[in-house]
Image (tube, rainbow, N blue to C red; front, side):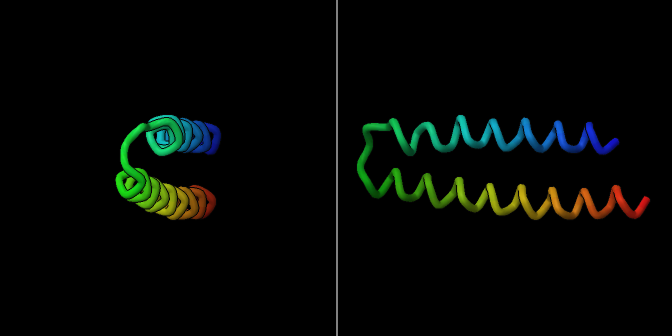
Length: 62
């Protein structure tokens, strides 16, 4: 169960990194658009880390 949970979150973080930070670093849009995208990506990272910690805590209690 733990390995599956770790695998799912590793895949989710990799997808957010690829599809989130790629446009921030390599897009040719205006700076404001890139900053908004970076802020949204950071919020998604924070949410994922919160869910990851809660999930690990829940698995360890069982």
